Length: 171
Image 1: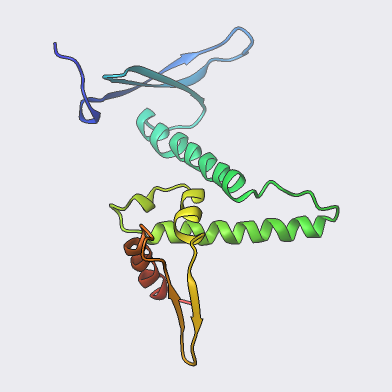
Image 2: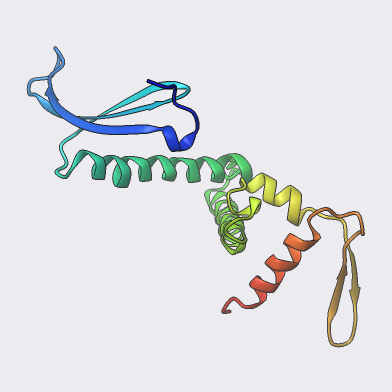
């Protein structure tokens, strides 16, 4: 038998069994996900009382929960939304509301990126530093505003695509 090599050679299987730890009064349903690849095996166990196939529960509920935790982490880490150090609760509420608006804007910007683009999966701090926090010359004219980017800006094409897609969004 040959060695596994690459993402296509990953093998994933699901199973379930009943289990009771010494401190539990009843047996509970446990779902197992076993994955084997060139890097080795990875086993995950989930204790649940939900009905459904093990694969469906793992992929739709458990993985979605992990994704939600990643989104919350991005909100706290990259937007500093856990900074609520004001002495007034209303000031902290306003601060959190502004951070949430920034989160929504970055999430929308990431969603507008082409599917095969690096920006589609980029973290918020990467988006902010690579596309938003850019030196530019802004010239105000009678009927328009002109934004001139430096000629050495490496992401001009990406920014142009995102700007064109942003303009097409409904108000």
